[in-house]
Every structure is written in C-alpha cells, then in structure tokens.
Image 1 (cartoon, rainbow, N blue to C red):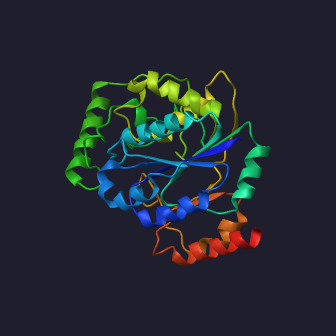
Image 2 (cartoon, rainbow, N blue to C red):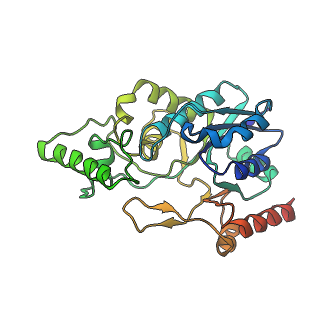
Length: 296
C-alpha cells in the first residue's frame, strides 16, 4: 500500500500536537516526529502515550537553535527514518503548530492524482542580487554565520557579534563556494516524492560543508538541490500551506492564525495551515473541524 510519511518538527504545546497527530492518523499514514531536545522534558507524557504506536516514531536527536543547521539535520533525520519504510511514497514536512484543513480521504486522493509532482515553494534566482542586509538573499550562504553558537533572537550582544563577524568577512573579501549556478529561497515546508527525498538526503550527507555555518539552510538547500537535479523533477511552486506573514522584521515570522482567517483558509487550495496557537486559535480550530466533518 502506498503510504504518506508526515514529518513533524515540534518544540512546544504537546497537547496540541496530540490533536494534530489524531487528525493525520489513517490507514495510509505514518507519522515521524522530531522533538527539539532542548524542550524534551515537556513531552514526556506525549512520548509515553505513543511509544508503542506502530504508526508513529518519535526522535529527539538535535538541540535546535534559531537559524542554525540543526533544524535542517532534524529534517534529514526524519527523512532517513521514514525512508526505511519502502511503502512511503510521499513525504510531508510539518510543524507541531500546523493544522489539517481537509479530510484525509481528500488528501490521499489529491496526491494519488499528482504522484509525480513535487510541491515546494521557491522564489526567483537571486544569486546575483545585491543585498546590504547580512541575513538576506545569497548572503545567507555566501558568508560564514554563527547561529549554532549564538542566541541571536534573545541576546542583543549575540546579534552584534554575528553582524560584526559577517561584516569582517565582507571587508576581507571572504566568500564561500556555492555548488550551484543559481540560488533559490523558499519555505521549509513541502510535500515531496520518495525520489526527491532520497536525493536530498544523499546530497546533504555528502556535502555538509555547504550547509554548515550558514543562516537557515533549510530555506534554500531543498529548492536548490531539486531545481538543479539532472532528474528534472516536476516542481510545483506551491507548498499547499496557508501562512500569513508578519513582515515587521528583516526575517519575518508567521502570524498566529485566528477565526478571522477562516474564510481565506477554506477558499485556498491548501491542505495545511500554520501557525496555530491552542488558546488564540481555539475558535479557528473548531471552525476547521466543523468544516472537515461537513465534507466527509
């Protein structure tokens, strides 16, 4: 039987994670969860509840810092684990703050009809785009960064250290090598075929220097590998995720979704939405559940 591997990265709200897991369970679903080891103590009850569930595997191999490489490695850890099951044909990357928007039967049917397509978002080639901001564009990978060692978001001195570190490389003419003739940025969340996931894991395993000491490599490396592959994947520039962005900062973050987003969500072609916060999104969660039931 052709099965779907749901890969989930989690670090908070274990109670809501149970809701998400419950919505994904089905005869063609297998669930693989990575819990940020930094927050493992909050998930002990969750782990105990599901440790004997044959349709789910839970790992906590990485301590993830914002912007660092360990988030990417947590994803490839999940990919490698799911690839061990030969029945998995599609791999869907989610967070513990996502919500399923349609019945699973509709989900399965959609990907049966699009079984050779890769759903992953990407922007234009920006390898020659000039950027002043040190975290924007090709500067993410052109220079060395220290996100695996710094608390960039929580410590203003760490932010200053990172900025000075990159500026010094600019002044000294230090530039890293990039293996592709182009540079594509997009979101981490995807729905990819087995062949695409196999190529991604193999490439990253053999080219770790490319992604280490960069900024948020999970937002560029998947796109760059697949677009430049000799296998000529059929890439659909749509990740089927509904996300609203807060663009107040250089590196925006997703807004918490509430009931005010409901009409836009159900009018979209998306299968998932993020980001969900159990208290603030409570009414939206109820509306989506009622919507799914009405379609079954």
